[in-house]
Image 1 (spheres, one colour):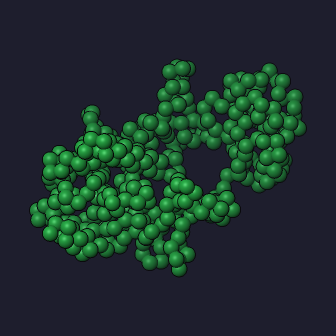
Image 2 (tube, one colour; image 1 turned 60 degrees about the vertical axis):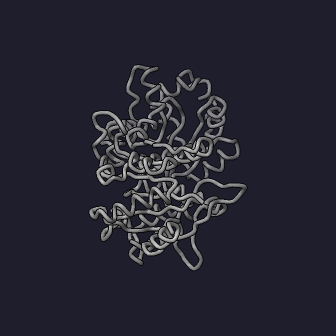
Image 3 (cartoon, helix red, strand yellow; image 1 turned 90 degrees about the vertical axis):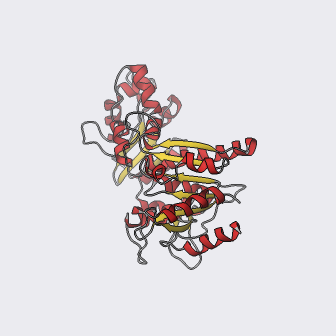
Length: 376
């Protein structure tokens, strides 16, 4: 019974509204007439012409087109948002929708119950508030790249759109909290989130580390600052990530590797010492791991309760029996295409995939007719 109007593009806003759609909200996606969301052409292209990014981020929604250059179109959208939406979520460049009379103040003046979510690049205040931004810019500017990759190597970004999608999650959380508040007070709210704030939020541990040590954390490769052993090690056929972050698990790991004497080595007695002497520790561990396959070591570690996991490719993950058992890859009847579902279940049931992403303007007539009927 709730509706969200998304005036969004790219990754962050569409991911936020997909979360709401997957949870059952009626999401109406607004795209520019004629060209649509830039994301339609991103990623690989399916045989039917659909872009992989757009398909993944915009399933379960209805789609309409509006020409915001035309005043009559802008006024229709103002009325539709004010009279038919519970939530409006937008990520256009700062000031764009305000210039069209579609900003938070404009719509809340017409309907005090609206929850209006702004998803910006740098936030709602400060000297950079009007600047645009994308995921890799924020991974750089927010410090994420400074702790990602190998020391001495060129900066790299996290391989998925962690800032965009993380900001989408914060928007969904903010919207859900505001809906609860509206149930209590009858009033909507303005929710503000940004890519930069999300980037900063991911830096919670590094920020604390700088204050505790007075030093820059630096890059940790596949590991993690201040914890050892806790990273990928080369085996004869690939890499295996091993997590033994406490003394008990470290002792078990040493036993599996056939070097129980490492437990008493003065360089490795505690986690702090192991991390201080990480190069020596890794050299010792790697020399043994290289002698056998990933599967060999994983079986041996599983028997003693030391957590480990091979570094897998995407296609391997999709074929993994555990992935299949969870039913998180979802499809529609008579289709071989599958998309990753929501990582939540309710009473044992995962929200289902209801529809593919809309074609450009697919629901123009239906949504406008529906709105006109409701107004009558």
